Image (cartoon, rainbow, N blue to C red; front, side, top):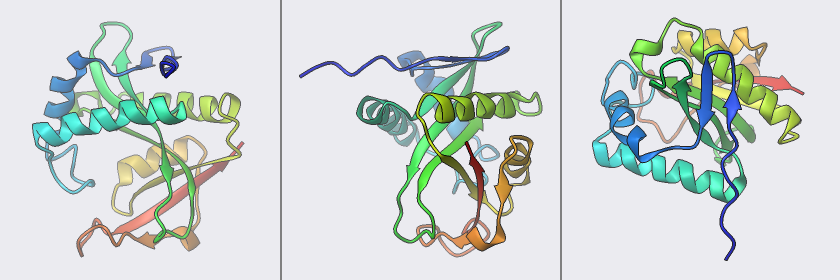
Length: 182
């Protein structure tokens, strides 16, 4: 069996989007244990759940050639979070395709990193992956992430708003979809 191709790296002025390293597991777990970081995602994760997510990210890249990159600050090498792509295939949703997303540690908020990483992902998605359209999903109440989507030129159509049946009743169930075409 042939080895999986190497994970492509994306470079921006301040960021490196790269493959996951074992050294990322501890800061990723700390980030996922932060209730504020996970406020729109259903609450904190255990260390085991966090580590399992990285295993899934690595497997997705090996299988599809795209997925969630670890995001690192180029200047000092600090781990900041993740950005990248996932498939949207849930039968309960009124749309399907490839989603772009990001999640950063709290210390990285407010510096424009999510927009910078998102822009790099969109460029890769359209030019390298040849995607005709890219989606972005979040809870209706996640104004910070929605602002990033709008800065990236993504458009929200209320006709795409949805209720996520995999989420318990409450404010996290109401979702919004933004789109951008190549």
